[in-house]
Image 1 (spheres, rainbow, N blue to C red):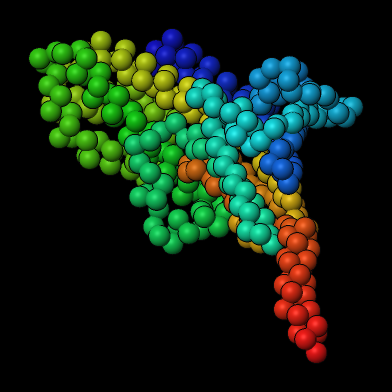
Image 2: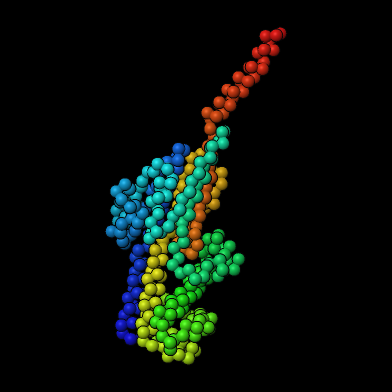
Length: 332
């Protein structure tokens, strides 16, 4: 690897390490749902080192923003909404982390039911292999339960590595097509894909996903030897660009930190998939892996008694009874 390439690789790795260690922020979101369907959202972002970072959730001055704490700052942003749909519209920006919120209020005379569903969209930038197709059914069940063991995290690292290698090869083939060089037929690359991926994922090499940034020259030699073609400098420059693109994608998923989502519902809680239930407040706590690789949907259902409906029903029954009994009493 020449000096320029080494500089590029080292720069990317430094940025990733800085991003991973200095910008991790624990986040907490609380949402209060009122009986009339209005709601209030408050977001807390903890940041020890990067105290100047703006909170990433408010779009304009309609959010009330404040800073709490002395040495360790906590950024707090809150906003009231007329209904949940209005709150959901705050997260419609396709360039930002995706959140989808649904709310339904159902009147059933004696009771009113409230259904709340919030989905954190997966922000995993590599889409070649899905997690459920990579893991066994047993392993995927572990993932669903929030397994945080070292052994399982190693499997997630393997999933990330495999996706990075698949991404590299897919972009490599696209580059060969774009060059339209008769000396580099696309089919020659396609037929060697499985062999190439097996070489990259050979456990004896102990390669991680980002190691591909430092292996461009080795990859070129391998492809030339096994495909039997002479790769030109144009393609190697394309490969450098691919590695840089992959490094940027990897950097985009390094936010890290813990996440707490807390929902306060009207009435009593009937059903939820939350980790914790305290009175009419439910909460979920997880790290980025929970909604990095797949969507994470949080649901809660609650119910309030319509006391006026009970009184009204009682009044109607009293009137009906009176209408049935009084004529008999008069005849007697």
